[in-house]
Amino acid sequence: MPPVFDSPSPEPNQKPALDRKNSFNSVHLSIYSPRTWLILTIFLLQILLFLIARSLPTNPRLHHFSTPVSTVQGSDANCPSGKVYIYSLPPIFNTELLDKCDDLNPWTSRCEALSNHGLGQRAESALKAVVPDTVRHAWFWTDQFALEIIHHYRMINYKCRTLEPESATAFYIPFYAGLAVGKYLWGSYNYTARDRDRHCEMMLSWVRDRPYWNRSDGWDHFMTMGRITWDFRRSRDEDWGSRCIYLPGMRNITRLLIERNSWDYFDVGVPYPTGFHPSSPGEVKEWQEFVGRQRRTNLYCFAGATRGFIKDDFRSLLLRQCYNDTGSCRVVDCGGSRCFNGTSAILETFLDSNFCLQPRGDSFTRRSIFDCMVAGTIPVFFWKRTAYFQYEWFLPQEPDSYSVFIDRNEVKNRTSIRGVLEKIGKKDIRRMRRKVIEIIPNIVYAKPSEGIEGIKDAFDLAVEGVLRRMKEQEKPGFKWK
Image 1 (tube, one colour):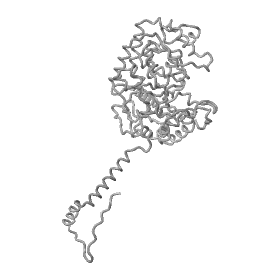
Image 2 (cartoon, rainbow, N blue to C red; image 1 turned 90 degrees about the vertical axis):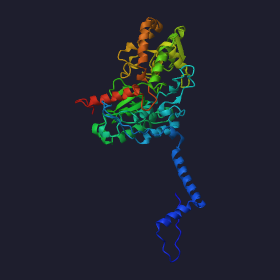
Image 3 (cartoon, rainbow, N blue to C red; image 1 turned 120 degrees about the vertical axis):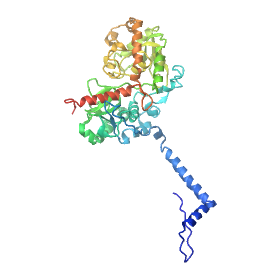
Image 4 (cartoon, rainbow, N blue to C red; image 1 turned 180 degrees about the vertical axis):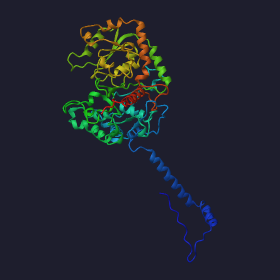
């Protein structure tokens, strides 16, 4: 509180003089008084301490997970497909979840994995012997389930964002559905179906009370759900996951997921986040040139672990073939924790191989698909639903232009993977590798919140695809209600 200066009392029976000149002189002379300087010093110190206090975070984690703020607005000329309005959800649906990052997983803290706006911890030191110095700073230990955070921070500064809902083509709901359900997925911790559904039910209650939802019944709304679709499709209380996608109100919302249900129009498959997050066109080009000139000494490779609890585990077949082809195949056995973030073994293996085997993961897809392709390695698929029916907005429409398909039943009937791959000529290998390297920008998420000028990354392609959908759905007979 600023100090109060008391005016000297007038002499008894004397009225105070209203002489402006004399009043000014009295103030002018007072600045030479030690007492005045002491009071001014205390006053300035109070202001300084106040400003310092405002700049300090009240919680150390809030410093990393603060609510993203931007006033950017796109112009109509630069946004032919329309603009996006972002709902200001209560913090319980996003930033509050991040603030409780120690409690998102029943076994370990998620704070490091979700830091840097979802990119995770830097990987520079661990990749020193693998990645060129000039692009090593673009590598992070990014968690495969961090996409909700990455998308939210990108959306805040999206070139076609609008702060005026009346002018929006689409409405983005920044709900971290994957983080909200993640800690409740493990039945051994006595969590209930109600626990797994609670956040999604509350979010829908809030959103459905907005006027722009009621205008369209949600058909022009979309959100990112950072896990696979099956984690949100529980049919019975005793089954896995939440029933978020089956809740009333979710039917018309377009959902961006790292794995989609191929038969659900409103599910859109988007690339898993990899560890490569370039900051400029130059970094993208330099990385493409680096992976293009790699001398690859292995015909093919496999990075993964067996699933012993699955009868006739297909991964076991791949591992056996790979171990038997020691001169042609390189293995990274991910049993235990060898393939967790913090190791360069997988990237080194991909960079050293022409082809990478990509069976289904715990579901139809796996992040390794994109780790492999970012390294300029040609993926080999055994299920069409692993990629071809998942990521149509991001991958070429001609599967054989960038990949190899071997039916899993042929492998089970002892077809040699090496035999199939050895029949592919060097010219065709170079052609496929060029295509894989060409589409690297399509499958990575740029580091800057504004994206990269002149390059469309996976985020840009996803949002532009959503806006196209909204325009199409405006046509007569196309609205989903």
